[in-house]
Image 1 (tube, rainbow, N blue to C red):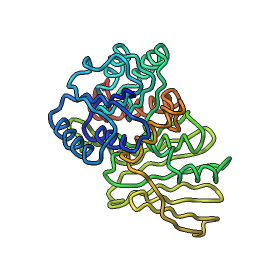
Image 2: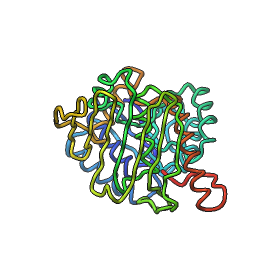
Image 3: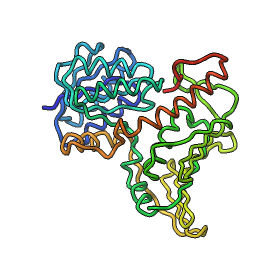
Image 4: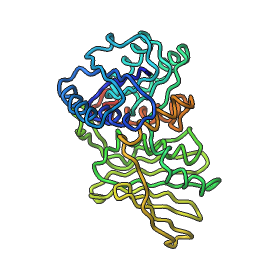
Length: 322
């Protein structure tokens, strides 16, 4: 039986645990979380698992030091402010083969390179959970826009521009095959907003991202887009509109409507087992490698950190997003 660790069981971590039901492998799942409400949620999950005859076994800990010394794969779904310390501790304490991290990976761009050295030293293959890369709809779009100049616009309201823009930037990287981006935060609102997650902050307004080739990504959070969340992917010859909440894709050719169809966008609870099986069975993943997303992750954090620093009128050492 394969040892798998889930660090941080609340919220997204619980979806990862549910997703293991769809795995073809058998795991002893070692779950670490110090929060009582997360443990209560886990007990509900385990009752559900027992009813569907889960083949996995589960152990809950409230301390990382209780983990076994050998872990095949670990999923780190804590909030961003503690993630570096968690990675350092688990890499030091456990013999670990694979690592899956949530976004934003860290709150400070200076954390990336020291962690990369630890991952290399311990030969730990690491990916970031940007699932759009494994959605068939985006794989199909990528095939249709090869060698085209790409313009992407993402619009919505209160969808978490600060914490979720990195997903859109990774999609931009995937479709353009670029990692070196310029950032323009001049049209972000000159205010800081409370996040839906306690103790974290959010941004609204417009963030612009570009490549030296002329590709561009515009990310918007504005009240005029209330009750909407749309991703438009445009080239000189073909365009797509993706309404993710409604699972609808529209295609336009030469600015004329071409077709509309329903699309499958799996939830995280439907993805984790598939992702983990690909890693375990094939020693690879279609998700983004840690080292491949470092540069634009770091540049985005620096951009946001400067914006927060201007607002607070002092240098902010950690970007308060997760």
